[in-house]
Length: 148
Image (cartoon, rainbow, N blue to C red; front, side, top):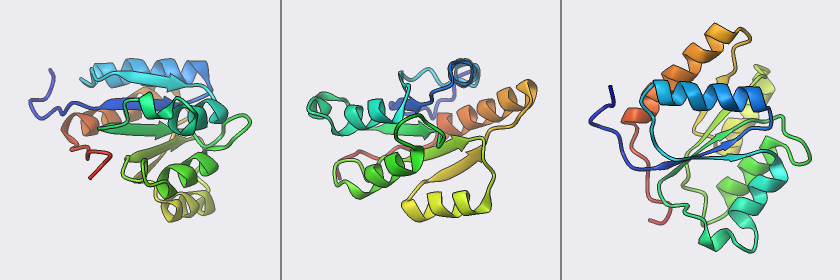
């Protein structure tokens, strides 16, 4: 059942692992998140999406980013830093979803401005359950306009 509190927003999933991306997509839908999801497969693709020459045409208003840290070419820390220091993207909520539970990485993400940090559970069932809980949270979250 979809929450009556669901707000119109899009999800940008920055995840290089195909299996994880499919699990995230499927379990967000199971939790009632039927919002559009754009998948970006690496850091370069993410930076191009948000800051490339065509970035002004991307629909950034009412966007939530789900970001893996361990990406090829450009890591999630750099993407997070860029998103949170650029005037056009700093208000976009960023949820870090990654395999690390290193306290220094967690502290660094919050220092860079992430809005939430989740560690991906190792087992399939635990992973699916964690993503469904994230999805339930997204069905009631209020997402700000990118531009005030």
